[in-house]
Length: 178
Image (cartoon, rainbow, N blue to C red; front, side, top):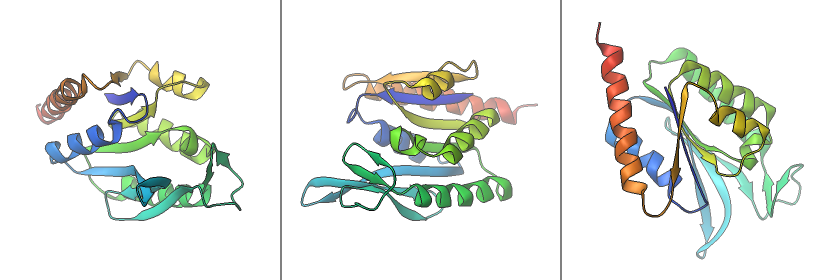
């Protein structure tokens, strides 16, 4: 079973994914995308893997980028380098869950990222955040029969988190039973 969390910007998708991972206490492979702030102002995003790697994904200060999403220059090479490392981790380690935060416009600018997401979803072990407003790719993965989608808002955050935790715990329990 794959679980996708969607919602408007700043509804707590990343916070929810991080909280679920922390409370599960399971072995995960993947990454979180975090804001980079300067004097309280968001100037970019960085990718942090659960194995400790960190790399800039996008910056308002990047003028040499060949991909721009809104005001951000996107470092596709950095993203794809992280993905190559994650591919190796997926091949060479035992894990319970693949975590991707986020499946969004910046990440989707990379075909390697889109291929990575499909491969991960095919494993049936994904917890990911995904942008609310769909394009053809995000619509198709939200509609997969092996995927549940939860829409976050300011009022249902705790309920969605608890539901996802229960579903994942039940899933892990069923995998361990003969």
